[in-house]
Image 1 (tube, rainbow, N blue to C red):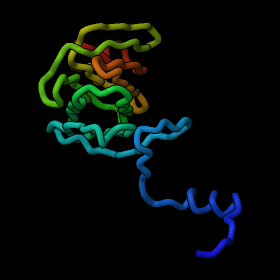
Image 2: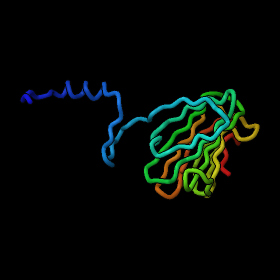
Image 3: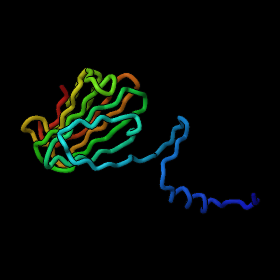
Image 4: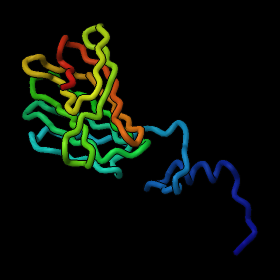
Length: 164
């Protein structure tokens, strides 16, 4: 091996052009963006796993709703869900204790049509509840502390975001 040193500009260029994920063995990085996935609603369950951590799901429900099942709780898991369109097909997010079975382990604080809404010990979060259409840009984030799921978000139409 040579003794040639790499300058900061070269290292920066190599990192910026990296085309894969890096595993840091449990290290924490600050200021990391979200992975983004666009999903067309299929009216079938999308069971999330720990490997999906940090994903922002942009959900197109023009033709069908979408059901998400959160994974088995583990500290640090986080997901974001954004409505791509305005319609009445629901986006349902299910809190689970094992990745499959619904469990009342979700709590949240939300702004819905300008009003503060909170809920505790729930298992289903619905965007576009019943006939209350969700609006393009409505969003929810879910974070896990290892035991419970904590959610926050915003919705434009009154009663279009519910926890049950």
